[in-house]
Amino acid sequence: MDSKINRTLILIALALIAFGVIMRLLPHPANLAPVGAIALFAGAVLPRKLAWWLPLGIMVVSDLFLGAYDGILFTWAGFLLVTLFGMTLRNQSNWLRIPFGALGASVIFFIVSNFGAWLQGGMYAHTWAGIVLCYEMALPFFRNTFAGDLIYSGLLFGVYALALKFVPQAETVQQ
Image 1: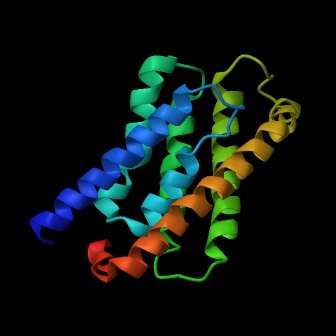
Image 2: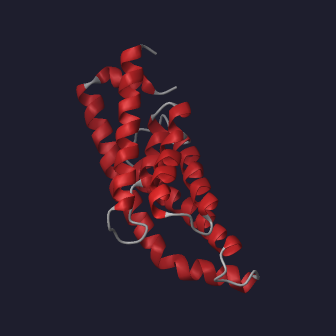
């Protein structure tokens, strides 16, 4: 990969990290943030080595401002798994990858992050009933997670499709 493409990829990554951090820090409805969509997009489009760093970069920087919380590592792991899921969408250019990708990303994040909230938080008993209650109480947040993943994925993949239309050599960035 030549140095011009490397610089472009680094600028794209930094812009996505800055966007994700700003959107997490600005007031917004709970879980209606672009981190999952950025993780999905990074996994599906960007070089693998770079893709892993986007969600981690967003979370580390924004959590420095927001503070630590129960299940933080599970939240980060959830986004890394979304990146991995995005990698399964590589080479699939049909429009269905956006809504189904967003749904898959939301489900992955919901399962992993709420398992962490149940396991490490003190709100729910460490019983079967406790974990069921934890997931039940998290359902309203899932709606926002899916809405954010769908909206921001549509935006990211849409802008990318337009860029490919006007800059055909951009297709060579995946590795």
